[in-house]
Image (tube, rainbow, N blue to C red; front, side, top):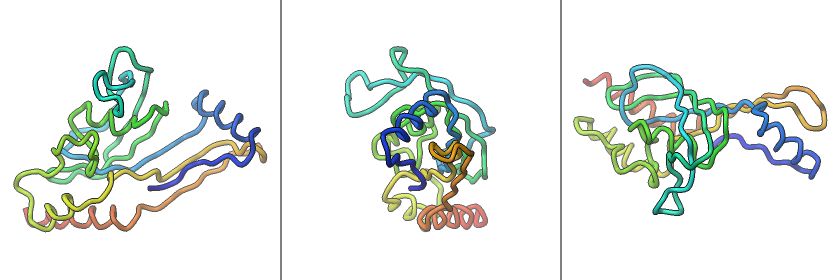
Length: 177
């Protein structure tokens, strides 16, 4: 869920592609990941096609460089709410990078490895995680120079209801333990 840029003209498209290549567009995401992180950090791994599953991406020496910065918004007993900023824009970058450090995004059927439901959580949280119908990943902020106006613009999208419900359930689980 969240924000995305759509160019309405070929000139705008060309401008925005160049801005992305020059890393001038700031993109922030929110994610709920499996496991409890100790601190924020940066992941710098090359991402390319998975060697055997062509529909997947993977950390691979033959890939293109990718940089993902993350900081902790809130730690829970078995999960972590993170703010993620991308320097690069590789396909599935956040999902691949978080999985590469053994903290896959909740609800991710491709990279989650069925590790998102932890032992020792209460029934309400177990059901909420198991029934989360998508990746718990949200594009919440974009900043870029508008291709026609030439000035910096910023757009923000609040977290959707399903992620807010997941966060509330995580908080309730922590209060009971």
